Length: 196
Image (cartoon, rainbow, N blue to C red; front, side, top):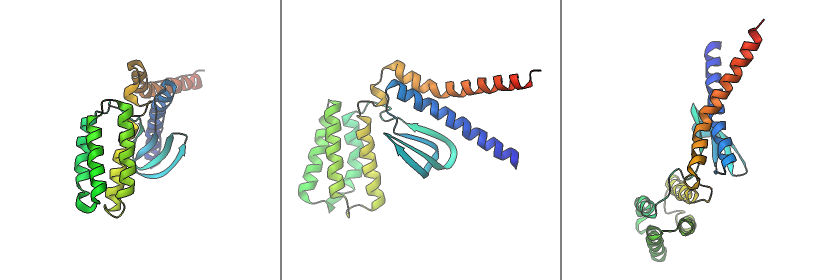
């Protein structure tokens, strides 16, 4: 039993080191990291420091660092992704709010400037926060608000897609590099320990 526990702890430490490599590299290169998790959702415990939420997930099969904007947001794709969930609001929303929703969706689909797109998405998020209570079940409402909030994050000035290629490569390679550095350090310690 002790051997299995040591294996699990060792794997978790490898995951933590790997994800810390990504996190530190993102910070060093000016890319925004909004979440550092060991384990996958549901989240058991979390705390926020600055822009980053640190936490532990219930499913201990890995970990992740959330870097908003892995891909450049395209307004037409965003509008298309929103059309289905917003259609679920149906006729429950008052007519003036429904027309405002339709106008915002059209404005989002027509955006060609990411800064303007971010403002339109923030307007949409504010409108949805106002009109969806009591209209959608809580779970569906939270999912919709989180999806739009994630789209807003994808437009952030420090989003991953905005960074130069070399910065993105540093962040990607930092995880495995951190594991290699720890392995080399452990091998050196063992070599020194067992050298007569």
